[in-house]
Length: 145
Image (cartoon, rainbow, N blue to C red; front, top):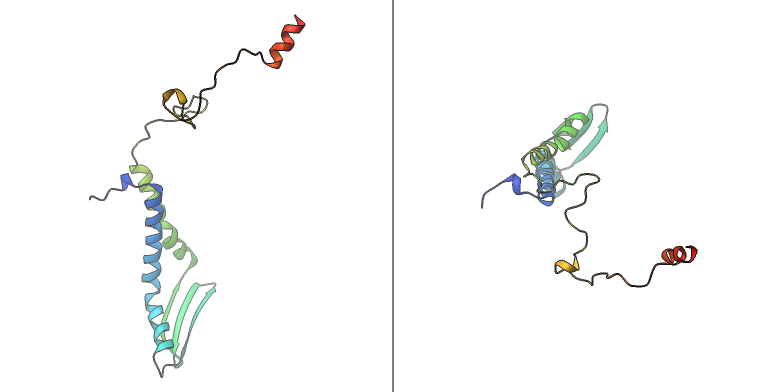
């Protein structure tokens, strides 16, 4: 099986975005998560973990016995780039490499495919056959002439 972005559908593209976001969160927050786990699970450790949003952006930190053991911060534009940048680039690449559409729908042109199957071409349903009874409009025209 070969890897080709040209054959991706929308579902695979969204799945790739979700996979990227999960991996980004795991890589970015794994050290902080490890310290939080140690502070909560290992006996004899006392400390705090915090996350804050301020003028400098987002800051997360972990303290053990009032000593900082982990701290990280990022500005909001930096976080926005990492969250939205690579998925946006992947989407643009996907749009550029997609195979061309077989049929281009032009506004005002008849569609090349029907929304419902045509009974004459083996679809379901019954074809509508004209009746010999005139419509009410035709009846009123005949009376007036």
